[in-house]
Amino acid sequence: MTKHVRDEELELYALGGMPEAEAQALKIHVAECGECAIKLAQSRGTTALLSFATRQEQPAGTVKAELMARIHANREREQDYAWPVPGRSWEPSEAGKALEPEAKKAGGWWNWIVVPAALALAVLSLALSWQNRKVSQVLQEQRHIAQELIQEREETKKLVDFLAANDTVYIKLIPATAAFATGSVRYNARMGLIAYSAELPSAPAGKSYQMWVVPATGSPISAGVMEKGTLSVGPVWLAHVPLNTEARSFAVTVEPAGGAAQPTGAKVLAGTN
Amino acid sequence: MGHLQLSSNWRRMREENHGTSCKVNAAGPKRETTSDWSLLKRIAQEDEEALSALYDRYSGLVFSTAKRILYNSGEAEEVLQNVFYQVWCTAARFDPAKGSFAGWLLVTARNQAIAKLRSKDVHAEDLDENGVWLPVDMESHSDQKLLGEKVRSAMAGVAEDQREAMEYAYFEGISFTEMEQKTAQPLQTLPARLHVAMDALKKVLR
Image 1 (tube, rainbow over the protein chains, first blue to last red):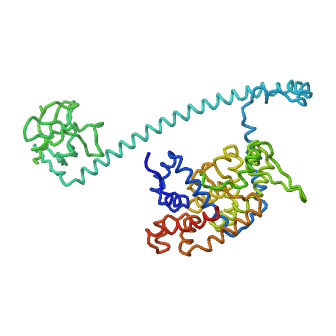
Image 2: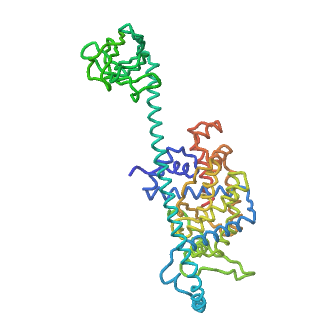
Image 3: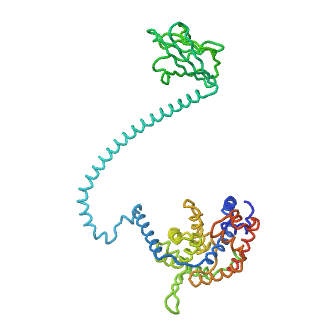
């Protein structure tokens, strides 16, 4: 135990003038130290005398009535919610016993109400259960939509960050053949993201256009096929590539529908980083 | 606690514990001199008349204390009602051997009024029912009047800055650091000033 609190400090605390942090420390000590607790009780008593230094006034007469009403109300509430005490609440008083036959008679017609009421409650309970299930389903759907929206927001944010980043490079794609074709690429090696768009003639039957990132070293990396259903924002396709891939050039080739692991077909667009 | 003199209040309480709980003034009209403790015992048995008697005894003091802090009769009456409601709920916890009921009542009223003054969300410190020791008689209004005169006389002998510091702390719940700004008195001297003022109050108890 720490050493006892000085009388002056106890007085200070009792008066209410002690700063909060010190007061907390004192409280902890007093809770453990009987001697200081007694001294604090004495200091509090002394401070209580200050109440006599105030101008004495009387409260409105209604306050007492309100207090009593509050007590009555609370008692009634307690009685309403009280658990039955064996041998007390359920045992009828003498007066109650005298009334018992009447009560039993009353119980006869009461049953006619209890049974339909119980049935009605059962139906209501079923209806509520069904409604509850419906609400749960709707809630589940809403949760799913919310998750999708969150994901979409994340993707959009990522795209905005990508487009606004200083290290995102823009490369114009040049047609490799005489056929009309044009396109562009935005690429950020740090973020491992590529966005590209292209205007190309329809791919030959059974074929798809495929975008490639050609790294400074190693084999070309697929950046996806330009087909319906692949990740795109309007006419812009998006793809992830391994982070920090230093791209030497980009190319679009004609590949079997669905894409190939490595470029096999003719190059239609190309651009150098 | 041995150095404090037991008041007749405590003696009466002990007598009551030995079976003479209610006294009647033999000279003149009947005057109930039931002690706080016997009333509290009855309140613990849910005797509303006992609460009513205790309320009549102390409501003025409790209300005046709260009003001195709040400067608002409505709010002070709210504190008054809450304090006595608390008495109703916790009467059984008071122990005459450990604390002073009237002292607890006044300190609790003060704490609740300060809490109300500071913020609606701040709760008053839970004061143990036996956490105040005030061995003086104040069970009758004449006792209270006499005590009031003694306290005012003692406070009149205290220097103004000392009394002011004490009142700021007790009636406004202002801490030292705040008091320093309010009174423009150096922080280091405040505890000493309060101690002197407290000493003056203690003399009332001797």
